[in-house]
Image 1 (cartoon, rainbow, N blue to C red):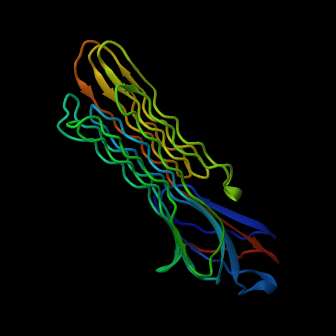
Image 2 (cartoon, rainbow, N blue to C red; image 1 turned 180 degrees about the vertical axis):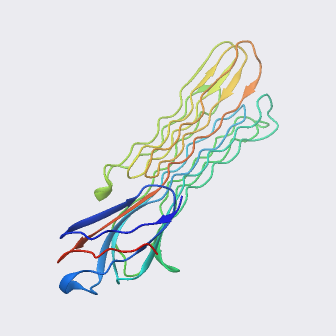
Image 3 (cartoon, rainbow, N blue to C red; image 1 turned 60 degrees about the horizontal axis):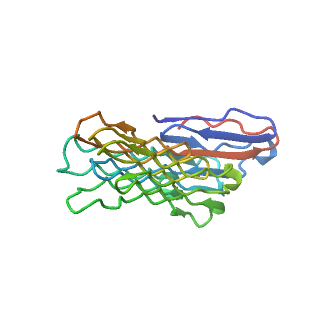
Length: 302
């Protein structure tokens, strides 16, 4: 989704606009009315990058959770008539499972979360990298490996005149279950997001249970962002001779990360069952500014 938008004339007040959907948008900085005509406009901008996706699994090792996206809030002074471009990113895609019934390959890697940015033309005002995707689980030829996890987003860049008021890193994903009958671990958490709202909690690690000669490994919980929880790792239930591994949860962006796939083996079926990883949560941008003396005369779509 993409598009242009504008603000109609307002009375003296703070104007706020939020861009909740993935896409690229443009906006023209408005001309002030009254005796402030031509005056510069200071915008306070809040930017959330997207969370990373969790890896998919084969039948012998679960995957870890994706990393959480980063949050940045700050201020920049613009000139009326400048055209801003806002990029609201998608979360990283969860990795696909390996084909059921085989250990010949690995689960697919989870994708990195998308980068959120605000620019004037090609000039970067602020850019925030997304959370890392977790690796797909590996072949079990040499024993059950420790599945990798997605790293929380910690990086951003900004124009020298952009004043950063607060920056909150995303949290790392948790580790998936490593062998036998084991649950995944929880992802990290973020406790204080300032103006962005309360910090999210790390996603819960997937549970596991088994009977007979089965094996069940739960997926790892995902990392939180400043605004949302990481996704839950998948729950694994082994029945009879079935061997089950589940995907990790997707890392949080502005939105909650997706849940790793739950799997249950069939009674008496000696088959390996892999699972898909959860998708990362998408990003978000909002900004606000104060109008005076009759407020903005409006900003036509560019």
